[in-house]
Length: 166
Image 1 (cartoon, rainbow, N blue to C red):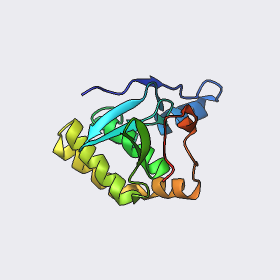
Image 2 (image 1 turned 30 degrees about the horizontal axis):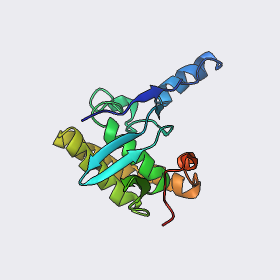
Image 3 (image 1 turned 60 degrees about the horizontal axis):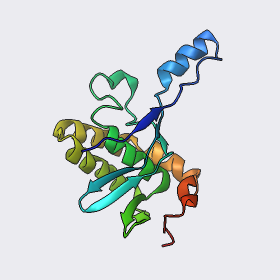
Image 4 (image 1 turned 45 degrees about the vertical axis):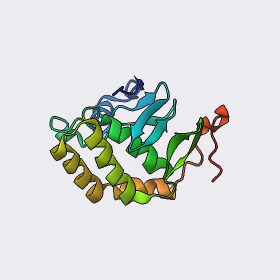
């Protein structure tokens, strides 16, 4: 399996005071930009995360990073999960075009997909189960924040190869 090509984004701490800098460092996780379209075959679906999408890996509290690093085993499942939480659909390549995959799938569906992608990518059942339980219990705030402040249509639509009309 190929991994996504990612570009780390700067954690903005330089212009902050000493205490704010430490708090920012402790409370933030690095964000990553997908540098090239990432295609992943999942159960017969050719899922695509477009170039330019920014995410933070799995949202694991810093206290638990030694057990479940946000950019370790959970990187690829976290990438698809973050996109799905933001837009409530994924992109699938069909007949050379990008179409919406499972639009309106909802939190429960995307949490289960996170676990299934993790199983396919890393096969570490306990880590995937633990992350899924954490999402089920604690992912509601992130899910609701995207529903209250929808980000609209992803900006990559003007590339011309998408057909997401329906």
